[in-house]
Image 1 (cartoon, one colour):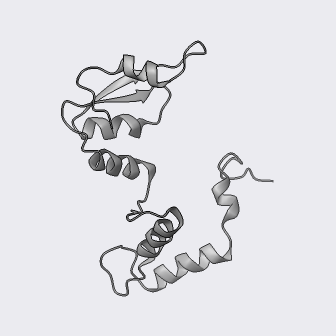
Image 2 (cartoon, one colour):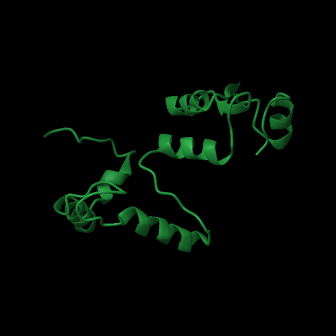
Length: 134
């Protein structure tokens, strides 16, 4: 018996069914896997964004392909850039640091222990005078 490709802790792969396979096949058969150009645009990203706008009652939504891209978009949307300090946890994924550095901002470490927790007071005390409060 072979080992599963992904551990059960990554459950997304367990919920791929015929509907998802058909959607991918539709994009591939249209030879148009890109959002803004191709032979036969399927406009899936626009449909997903519309569904999220409707569900969340928002004016805007932007579909991206990864958590790293989402963090980059958030940094731009919050106008975070050179000289700004961004607090990040000590336990993280590398993209948490890379998007801060790519924006020209300064990563500020915030280490959590069993004796500490992030509260508005601890955040306020930790922020340097250069930190942008969003």
